[in-house]
Length: 548
Ligand code: 16G
Ligand code: ZN
Image (cartoon, rainbow, N blue to C red; front, side, top):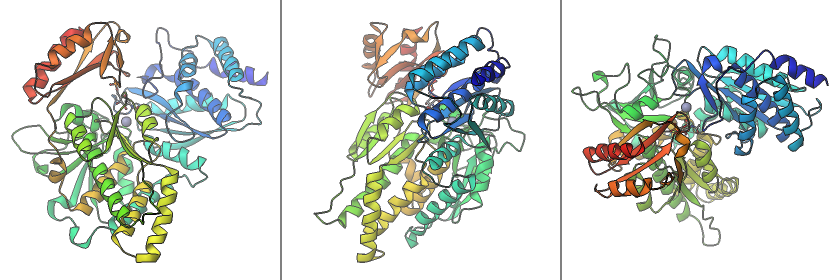
């Protein structure tokens, strides 16, 4: 009864805006910040219930990533640090759209019963809260707190302004009984980076212009946090621009999404940076792309996208594994299952490259939750979206074996190549965020690998030649009319469209094209690639016409 009256009282302070329908999409709820208070309040309730149900710490992050500054959003992190289980998404939708306090209360009671969640104050809930630098974040965070506190026995712990991956990391660390402050996060990243750098062969230290990395912070939380992390690093000089302190606007003409989609130089970068190694974070620092400014004459960049990051990481890990196995005796082989996960957006040239390396490549639909879910099936699973979101997951059993093997090797032949390979892999498993894609992990790993291989960014970029591609979006009445299958590579509805796409595609050498309904906008997205840019453009346009 007490619980009911608290819920009725607090929820009446957060009426839902008229005429808006909320949906827990690929990246949680996202909308104009002005209509989000009730949704975030309700997401707070959901997080508290999830915490009681799982008897674990849950995360709630307030961010709209690469969206414009006036937008905001909220997403929930599960006990593993990953995305909220898909099984609860329908409940999230129902909560967000409940028309009034009574409906809301009714929904909660029914759901709690179904899921056997006992709200009696004995089962304690604990939710870690984080937000990015958006101005609307502060009041939305307050709404989340009220939502959490309206479930009896719940504690909301405000972790302050964070990157999305930092919050996910903290949730995971807390549930593993590890130290989980921001300081601990920075410690773990910087110490494992130092470890990798100490293993760089002496003759390989990169010199000259290759020495410095210039990072575009998207005028968001990533720029600010990278400046903290940077001070703890040895052997790497980083210059951060677009930190948000210089008056630039979040995600406006800056950031990983802009750079990857538009393939042009971001604000504050230009002719002084020609040939430099540059990188861009997105607004909540869970995406990363590298780029080079090739010449003064144009605004175009040479992009090193998520696919190329994945390719570098896969190449490096494969190499370390094969060195490691050289030292393994016949009776003690642990054949790590090593797999790569991409989406249909992966450049065809990257998929060819990975397959030629002898790796197993699988495709999933767009959205981190799908890629992540697939990658955990391997001992070492690497996933990346072309847009720069991705990570490398290690299984506990493989890490356990690796730890043991490293000990054996160090007592047998301290300083041998197989032992170094084992140490490198162990360091990578600590450097790389195991909860979710993290621009900082990706950046430090890429830097350490380039140094280990003594490669310039140009050599990295030349791993393979991207096939020219084009992306378009088409506004439609009802995007749900398009239904896809086989990891979004085939349209099953409306009938006939796939045949028409096929008929267009065969006209172009190396042609490939697909369409899918966006999970974040009211549009159908079109992707096309072909052996020439003109071909890709023209294929995208003709496929776009089929959709209109
Ligand atoms: C979200 C996804 C991202 C995906 C994008 C696609 C997460 C954390 N983020 O931002 O992975 O690439 O949506 O957007 O899952 P779209 O459906 O509008 O093309
Ligand atoms: Zn993001």
